[in-house]
Length: 139
Image 1: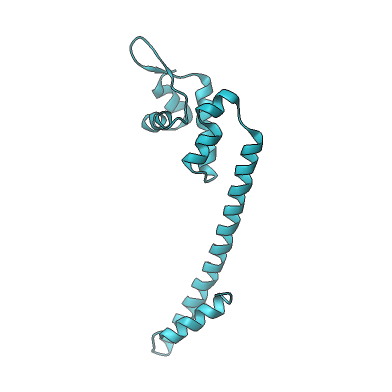
Image 2: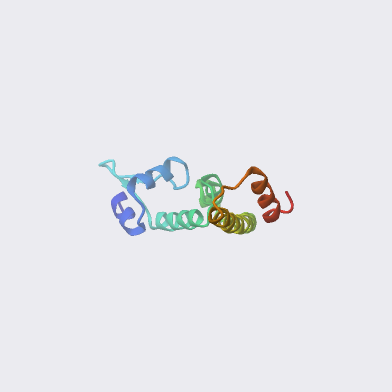
């Protein structure tokens, strides 16, 4: 299939497909006598893997190590994939923890601002410091 057909089937823009190809994420396609790229059905599978990996938050470098040209020739390394998934899951857990703390701090900051503004004053540096200690006792 030509690049336009592949783009339509996968929902990935042709220029993005060419980018993936240039980065070694997608094997170089055969070219017809007219110079057009001709992609196999396997290209749809590879692009699907790339999209999934991106949606899960993997970097292009990680994706290359998992589904790049070398990985395609040898198949997916299941242990390596599981290891990457475990590492990404840990990153997401840490991010969720940071966001939960940040959410609490925003709520407390907003509450304190409203109290101060009702009293006709602005928050002072010592109040900000205390607020930080109250919300982040470890710091």
